[in-house]
Length: 299
Figure 1 (cartoon, helix red, strand yellow):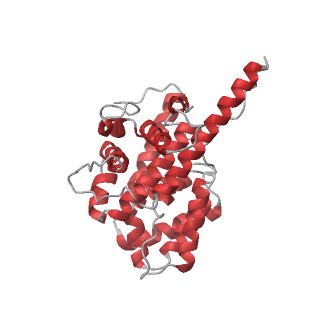
Figure 2 (cartoon, helix red, strand yellow):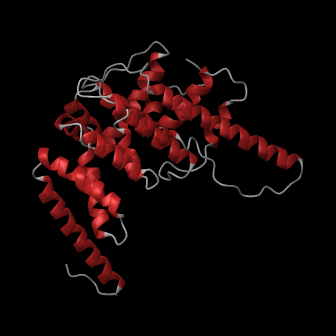
Figure 3 (cartoon, helix red, strand yellow):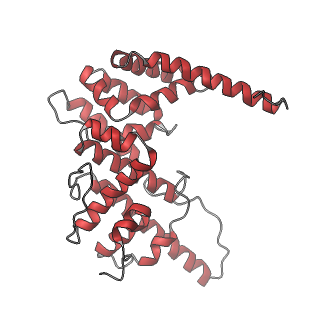
């Protein structure tokens, strides 16, 4: 028992993974500037990716997704991480629990079996993000203290961020793999990062370009891209690009078409799904228009 940790560490990892990860990092770190009270000072919400907590959550999801994809068979990964949102969240948090409890001489057990990942190399990326988060909080705390001591008015500043270069650095690492990797090479560890980056307008064009280059390597690359759960993301992006005015420029549209045609080779039914998805979006837009005009839609 350690008074610095919750009584039930396993449950804390499953329910509050970010706080538990920060607390564990502080406990293992020798920096005297990192204190326990920093855990409750992370600003923002998990759903707001522009806040520190939201960005940290996004990085955590990306790292744990990548670790799970690298150690689990494709069918098990799809069953645990892509079939149901709540189950996927628990599995990601379980990976953190496995890492933290392994350092305390405990080994969590799951069914289906999840291999031990406590020393996976991708955890280094997560540790770097946590360290930057905590050091940024220390700087903010010092600035507030200095301002209070000087009796100054604290002017509002831009919200603190964790690691603005995390996704850019991972895209660079993936591009290096594209230059050197092939069918006989080990799979690119950071391929699942592409899914998170596709949701960010800032890096979407570069992610689409790298993804198109990867799928040009052959059918095995298309199959590997589909194994991380790419299809729902592309379905959402391509329908948004064509149904929203100004939703995409011509370069982005071209990347969408190239990637979607590659998917059609493996999933012939994807074209019908795209058509039905577009019809559903059109009906929803018409319904929203009627509501704006004050016309009650018929039941």
